Length: 220
Image (cartoon, rainbow, N blue to C red; front, side):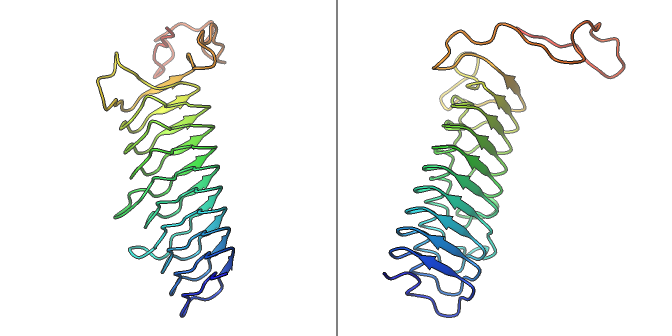
C-alpha cells in the first residue's frame, strides 16, 4: 500500500512494502523492500534498502547518485545525502545523517548496532556487534570485533582490532579522542582478563632496530 505513490519520472525502481519509496519523485534504479523502507527518498539513485524503516529519511537531494546499501531494521534510518555506504544489521548506521558534503559517506558498518552513534563520520569500516558504537564524528577508522572502539568518540585514522579503544586515562574526555593509533587485543566486557600471549611471524627472535627501516616492537 502506498509504495512509490509519489513517483513522477523515476524509472527502473522496485518498491515493495507499506509506503516503501512513497515520496520518490525522480530517483531511479532503487530497490526498497519493507515497511517504510526509503519512504522519504525523492531524488536518490541506485540505492538498495531492505528491512522495515531502512533508509527512511534518505533524500539524495545534494548528490542524487548515492549507491547506498542498507539491510536490516532501521539501518541507515537518518541518512539524508550520504553516499556509497553499506550498512548491514539491526540499526546499523542508524544516526549517520550525511546532511552536507562528503559527511557520512563511504562507510561500511556490518553487525547489529554497528556505528549506531556515528553522525557525520566518513570512510569508516566497522565489523562486529556494537563495533564503533562510541564513534560520533570520527573518520577513516577500522574497527573489528564485538564492541571494538567502544571508548573512541571523535578520533580518526585509528585501527582497533578486538580492543575497546582509549578511555580515561590516558585519553582525555569526554569526549574521548584518539588519533593515528593501532590497538590490537585487550580486555572486554565479556573477557576481563585480555590476551596473555602474542605470536607474530617475523618478529619473534629478531633483534629490534637492526633490520633496515623496521622499528622496535613494544608489547605491554
